[in-house]
Length: 530
Image 1 (cartoon, one colour):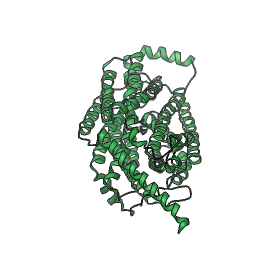
Image 2 (cartoon, rainbow, N blue to C red; image 1 turned 180 degrees about the horizontal axis):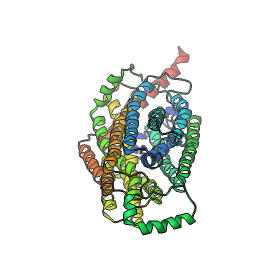
Image 3 (cartoon, rainbow, N blue to C red; image 1 turned 90 degrees about the vertical axis):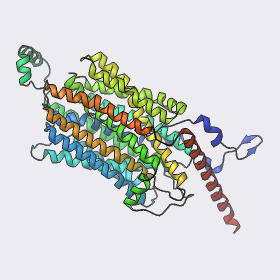
């Protein structure tokens, strides 16, 4: 799943940031550059809307791609694991590559980031649609899905990396960026709900029935005969109906994707940061050394490398766990929707929590809050009501996974700028390498998890699965994620950016921007006198 950046009120440091610079008749006047960098509500909304496509497509792929490849495209689990691993690994490689290219791309009349977003959108939606299309041939089907999955991930990266770095270029005022980030986070979470709802509900209405296997024939011959009679009297849903449903769902998401890109381009003006000299462009591997050489950044990457691995395993296998192990084949899409709705409702709570107790504490509390429910969901017997309750409670922890990673990354970038004032213009590198490590690790985890289902003897569209498949899915949605989350929290213990250091960095950078803007204003006013 993809994540939103945290918007914070920072009421406890407002006295440091809101310095009066002049007064007329007792009224404090804001600085001129503060007025120029203030974002309107419309601009913030347009910026936030740009985050929806990544979350919609990412959620749909994360929850449904595995079950689609296995049960609809009917690929062997071994080949499905190859597609998911290679696709994610390729996606990871493209992130630092695109980040490097973006950092070296020239400034245009539309900015540096926005042209990447606009030009990648048309091809991205075509590639996304073709991922959910079952080609009319068997030989070469694996190549079909692998090709379009990798193409889409590349084009999506050309959208998302510039969009993530755009945060630093919509305003030079930290408070305005934080406010815009809060809008973005809200829309991104709504995007995950929308992606889950569109994909799940449309596909759920045309869910083809399972196929009885030898185990079902031996164990429940009489029950199968009775259910066959009932199915004969009702509407018949074939696999072709399910294929069409996936295409309709992907078409709707593609339309929304394009609309969001149009709104972003039309309503956001990218601002060139001319007050600070941009350092000389650096090579690709030099960029790796620069960003990974910053200690807090390296530790933050490790923290969310492991925690995101845990949530990726849960996300990628939960739909299959609900349909195959718990037996909720016709309800799994509603269970997923409950999780995402719960996450949306919990976002304001985590916003308040991180502002009140700090981001580091929020990461610990948020990650640990989902652990009891991971244990409970595999411990109880199949009960739909209990599963809905557990899913709703789990969404509270999932909300923290959305909010906190992108909320902490700007703090690391600010810390780097404080320690390296002469090395600027590397924001895209920080964001892209951050995504690279998490995506590459998630690709490995999803590839291994799908391959493990092959070893366990998974049966495509089977009404029942071997016992080994059930055990494997329980490990993938409970034991393995819990271990990974605990490892990530152990690394978090040594993360050096405390609340005091973060607020100090913000104050130093704000004062630096104020001084640079004042110097630029004074230079401009002296020009007519020369």
